[in-house]
Length: 571
Image: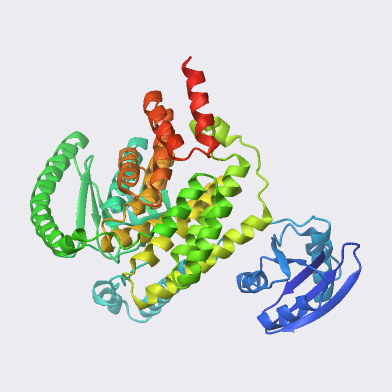
């Protein structure tokens, strides 16, 4: 193993490589921080390498370039202030800093820091840039006001009343906004913790209706801050003059309008103001619901008319050979399933469903080998939290990731030709769900898995819009709703703010749809319903489901073991 320290600069980087004994192998200076230069340096070293960079100026670009190099097994991000060997050095040169980093990495003494995902870093950079320009605009405006005020005081009156008005926010899909609002005359808007809880509840309801995703929030006594993402470019709702929408709760009138949220506090007696606000809310909701009902009814009739031809036909997702491979997986015959899918892919090389199903075979085989599919692991929350660290098979993981990547590439090519390709949408739904399962159940990274779950839900909804009979698409959303509904109330509220779904009954209903009318994922949905029945102490229902699965898949000893365990607990 080689250990490489990378000292990053704006126009170049200095690299120093040492071996496991600490002997210096090579030094180099990469001009322009080019990816080709980094690749040539690591290619000249024998064997795999680990690299370490400091979290300094634009470290993300160099970090991403190093991660894409085949010879680099791991890229470590070092905390610059905690790397004392460099910070406290009397003599500091680029070569010495790079050598110090490589030496610390060899001894596993690097003060590591968290590396966010590339998408998260892009969003943070965009938000920082927006904040910078907003501060710069405010600074220039204040400077102009000060200069004019010094020269001619009367002009300042005209500027304050008519000059430099704030423009409306630019709205587009996926935009991220920093929203801030303060009470009139800096008066308190949250009198106690109940007001804050009511505000979060109202915000959660708004997110459910609008699809907003709240990445961060801060509630103070007289103001609040929100970082909101709008997937549908709907920050400002056109509901009347000024394009604002108002929600009145507990005597406070919250107005969502351009350019930000605006609070209005009620004067006078608090109880009287709350009664007035509640009456206005009921009146507003009643009138609004009448309008929404008429619009929704018209839209529903149009939708039913448009999908009527589709409902008359069978789903084009079904393939007998692929289905037989899935049945072999459920019966733990993974080698036979791989051979069946290999033969099918020879005649369907451009279909992403083949490699996606093959990836499922690798995942199921690894879950069975590691004992992750035992029901007790999911019925007992403490046992799940305290489960031992798993040791995944590196070769199986490599095959799994290879097939996932192949399925994604084929699906993306098909979606470029037609964004209504049902097979491609189903394959994308599968790959996101399989990634989420591997990361959550094997790697133990639940938060990371949530991002894949939410992304897969988008493709599942698109698939259902194209093919309403693709009942397998309900499985991912059903798992998300049911499992997240088991979390504590505070966690569920936070998850809803971040765009996750936590409705238990909706999740069970979606699992039933897949279990009753699904195709490839029907047995898996039934197994999950059996686990849900065990959690709810409905042992007769669980035994009925497990008995059916055991009769269909006699070679799968998991069902027999679960039935024996269930009988033992009832005696």
